[in-house]
Length: 190
Image 1 (cartoon, rainbow, N blue to C red):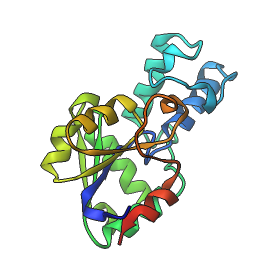
Image 2 (image 1 turned 90 degrees about the horizontal axis):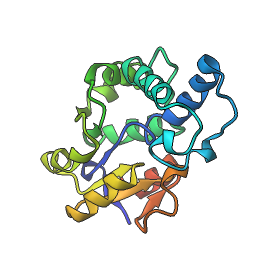
Image 3 (image 1 turned 90 degrees about the vertical axis):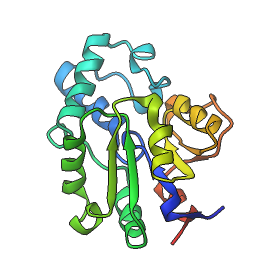
Image 4 (image 1 turned 30 degrees about the horizontal axis):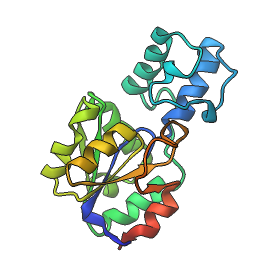
């Protein structure tokens, strides 16, 4: 299947940004919770699968959300290259459930060329369950997200979800999925 580059949008955390790596690293470095790996995160609600107190989980994610650069949040391998290539043909839309726009814009400005950032539509919804509205507003037909619940909602809204494979979304759906940015790039019609 080939997808036109102006018909697909992307979630940020867990798709473009390697938020799980940042969470694991910060949990270990700052709070001495070092006994788990990515594969141990089997639920989107991290506190449901790891033996870390909920307030600590919230504190770590809030730090990443508020200061993505300061916490060392990195792009997923291949994300910068693929999105940069896509912006040569059309705008790219990123729709995140994060409530704060500026830390994401600063993060994008740091990792992506200025010319690429000029071609990115960034929407911070503040709500995992309200992405369909923004996807429709931007006339997207496909959306890549790592949260299964979001993808299932999109499928019910006649938007084609593509699940970005992560340990927390395996065995919970029968939707199309991708494992990395090379697979995404291979499906884009440039």
